Image 1 (cartoon, rainbow, N blue to C red):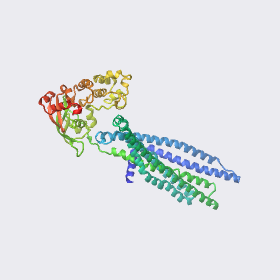
Image 2: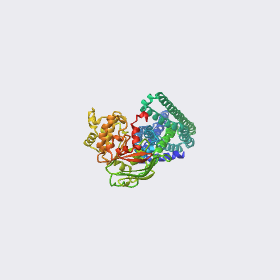
Image 3: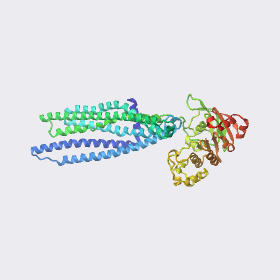
Length: 586
């Protein structure tokens, strides 16, 4: 319970910028509920009074009660409309703000802290889980305010008109508004949490099945994946059915309390009328007044029943946002580097507290305007260097500098603004080609984009498409080949015009013809920049780099030019013989 209260306070804290909207929505909801109760009460009195006046043959001023009925009807209808508009406007604004807040908290965690989560799970948290949080405001906060206001009004009115009924009616209101919701909260917590988990697991399974359908069919696992999705669907439906049954049970319990209160007031009122202690017309008015007042506490059962699901979603969201980033940003501004050179001395880095060293005493220096190739088997630490230089990973020992300034003194955005990366995994968004190119420089004019595309030798292909630069590339660039995607990545790097260039296996996975053609584009990209090339095939870049560093076990074991290393016959030469073998023979 204490944990739920803390979650509730945090959620209310996030809603603080929109507290004006939320307060206005709650006031409209209270006004609507009071108008509904007043309409029932006045209508009951008016009908009874008119009947009694007709039987007695006396005149009754019906203009005032008729006007009140119209007023309450208008207030109830108009108030309900305004309340829905205001509360939903507040909720939608809040959800938009929550997603922005979530993204801002998520960005510093990438990629190190997010690797343990699947993309579909992250999508579930930012979409479905945050959508679920609207229950905390729309279906929990507002109903509680309305219920408290309704109980207070009922207690005051009964204390002035029928004091004998005040205590039992308020007691039944508390049973319907506190005891029943508390029971539904207890009974609904487990299925609510299970529903959140089943929904997240189902989304992961469906997305994995769709994205890996080709592999599943090749290995004959498509049916097994379909059975898993079916089992998760049945689990989700079972939890939803449990919640629906609880909702029906809570509604019946509240209805029973309302009926008991109404009949209790009616029977007590008959006795009071017979003794002359209560005017006859007041009897239906109070009975209907009490019956209508239970509408104020009725939504609490459903609200608290959904609290388990809401708080489970909040825990999943806060689990990510509360995580500490692996790389801490400096408090001050980034320094101004003297040049674009990079130096590493005695650098050690690992991916876990007890993990093996990915970099173990690494030393190398990349002077401004020079080109260095990093070569080595998988696991030698090549990609770790890229992650370290981009401040995606933290190193535990040693010194790293850029422009003779400590790498840790740079803010991440300022550092990455000085570095362009072309890797074997070029991510393209489901947008147009020109939008994907402008990721490097959102303010780039069309002429600058076209110049970059020409230099990357992709312009002719783009203009040959029916929609040219407005062509949609599809999810993950599915409409483009691997070579075309890499050329777009090169055009991005050219458009960014950063002084430092990191090439991480830029030709990996391409056919020889595409690979050789891409090398020419890379040569254009490298001009005038400090370049660090990571490659399994240094022969293609041998005459384009100034030095080759051979990595093994996270440290440099050989260095020299391509020809020098081949003549030595050491690790580099053996590695060249190894990668020359057919893949099946390695």
